[in-house]
Image (tube, rainbow, N blue to C red; front, side, top):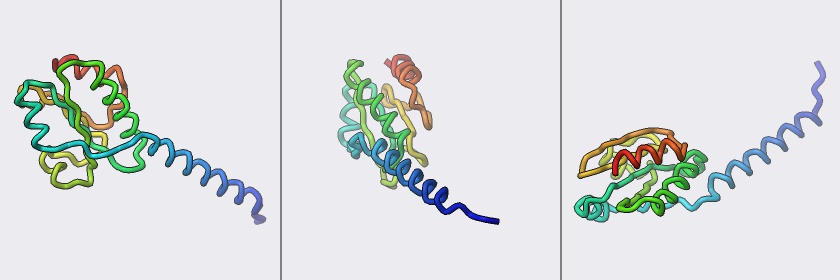
Length: 132
């Protein structure tokens, strides 16, 4: 059996290029923990629909979901949006969240919607509209 080392080198090069593109595309959107319990409780007390989402570094689905939710924050009235890094155990346990891209919607201090992995703008907007 003869190995073509040129092909292997090209494979490695393509892999590294793909990895870099994937890393930059997932990090191209600023992710930060915006969740603070006192702000969450204040928004609920004000009667707002509250969205909480979880993310993790290098997750492209998380970045996609966060872009949709950031836009929704401007497209809907009476809506508050918080995000947190799923590795933050205190917040994750508070909401019983075990996976990134978990999306929670609260209305009248009650959880009315939960999903994992949803990135479709249409489906997310439909869930928000049904909660308003």
